[in-house]
Length: 587
Ligand code: NAD
Image (cartoon, rainbow, N blue to C red):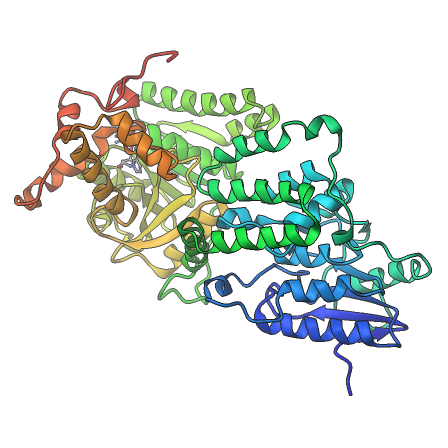
């Protein structure tokens, strides 16, 4: 009977093969367990190497299986039990990603090797979960409590060299080799190098499995108050506080409980988290973000153009942020304002934002200098003749926008795409004043544009497929999350926010203060409260929209006037020093 692994002398090679990332879906677990069990029992085999086919070792659990009421056997635990129970050395040969359950599988092996460009990590926290395949118990026993907790709480990925430095892998496979195909002749590939490495160690005693070691602190000093401190920090993690708190508790258990009890504790916490609304939402978001990349009705045959040079019209709050997005991505950008003072203010705002990052140590001065050199101020439309894409971010007023588009249409090359950052105006109407409606589209950034990931790509009636594909691609090049949407009042994001703000306004009328409402929503897990957010975005933007839509408002519906009254007093938020809150220099 054919063996479920290849043999290289007396070494078995088990290859995980379920594209694209060899995730540990049920069928993959069955294949892996059967191969491992057979290899461990095979008297012609002395040692085992596990590797991944294609571009990765293993991307981890099949996340969609978390939604199933019962997880089918064999579990990852059963596979690892089989490996740790084996007297034969087992080695994980890692290239590409070893994430989540994929890394936990490797932690169940006696040896780990990785290519220098591999990516190893436990990103479960980003899904509101904790590593539930023994990761919280084995990792502190391998790299120490501090390094383990840092990796688990950050979800950060380490490359092969950094993984070797903290002791997560035994060695780096120095030749950066991709894929584990062409195994004949044990050539220059991951599996081949790993087999050669293991062959040299066959005479050595087999290292103890991690389950039989003790969790350790790097120094006694760190032990004192370490977990109390970590729990305080975990409470400040946004979005996944509960998972962060449980990660700390599980790593603590690795130092206080016997291995099997720690594992059972981890399992119980994992099951609680899987059923939590935070994790269910974060998993939904994970799949939704992937789905957003596929635009309904847009064929994969449509080839997007590359945006090599861009321009932004309007150097206000949004325009300067959008110009930074291009500069951050290394794309030269012209920033056009007719008003010299406003242009100067916009350039200063960009410089100050970068300088603040440099002062906080988040950006190197040389990077700031390079980015600043990519932003060129402009005052005449003719200066935009060569750009591939223009994003308009002038006042939210149809006639102003239409005038700008007439000028852009005349000045820009015919194939240039003209995008508007309008929040609520009808893009069909804006496109109608140009001779190139197929090249007109919405690029709706969110404030602060240089920070927020979401980018609504608004498809107007005449927008061509090529324009849409080009802007989806450009959005990714700007490291945003582009989501294609259609035209309607507020598109998707602001339409949702409108309902949210309306309810927040009612709370004020019923006696709550802005800070009380904001605090309740911060505690709920929002990054900002609705009133601090309104003040940051500028109250005038939504006021303009409400005035424009006033005639169509349904009179029988309750309407909160608080925001309008603030605007009537000129309180537009941070930009005027007052909105729902007061903003004073230095405060
Ligand atoms: P802003 O008032 O800060 O900036 C507008 C800028 O446009 C000003 O600097 C003004 O001088 C300039 N401008 C006006 N007419 C011009 C013209 N004809 N030519 C060149 N420049 C001109 O406003 P903002 O908040 O940056 O908003 C700009 C656009 O972005 C609006 O359409 C708004 O709806 C949209 N938007 C705003 C936000 C937000 O949070 N503020 C979010 C998404 C989209």
